Amino acid sequence: MAHQSDKPIVLYTGATPNGHAPAILLEELKAAYGIPDYEAVKMSMSDADIGKVHNQVKSPWFTENINPNGRIPAITHKGQRVFETSAILVYLAQIYDKDRKFSKDPVKEPGAWAEEQSWLFFAHGGIGPMEGQAGHFALFAKDKIPYAIDRYINEVKRLFSVLDKNLSTREYIAGPDYGIADIKTFPWVRMAPRVGIELVGEYPHIQKWIEKIEARPAVKEGLTIPKDTAA
Image (tube, rainbow, N blue to C red):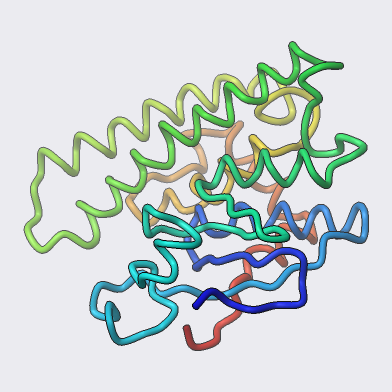
């Protein structure tokens, strides 16, 4: 059965770039507004745990009630489920970011909102999947396939070039203000060295942006979630 909690939000997550993004936003919201209170549930993504570990993403209770796709992250908020990282960020911002400290208002700021959404989904459909595939083939695949490794690493580098050029003219991804587009993108980009993509020297504007975001206390806390407890 789904996790029972007295908190308004339950975050089902893992220590991955996608898993860290909603945790960072939740911590930023708590720092700015004092809410929302939430509980993080660590989920196993290991196929070896299927049928053996209750908090495994392919468990029937999870796919039937939380995320039909059997992936993290996902949240429940007062009975409402939300899955897919960017959908969670948009939802949390809509519900809790009343002063628009981390997001744009589609009615009052349609242009800024469109820019924010464009870069949010640039990361969701581009950087995340491409870097994820690069990591899979470079680090985890049983058979090393040079074509696949080169294909995905080169695509990540191309996307990083787009991002670096964008950051050469603005402080944050969607403009002068830090927000959900940065929160979505940051956990992926900071992990690039694991697949052999170095940021220092190659992408100076990205490196400067990474350093600014890493210095934020809420980001530091978000990167520790879920805590290292048994799933």
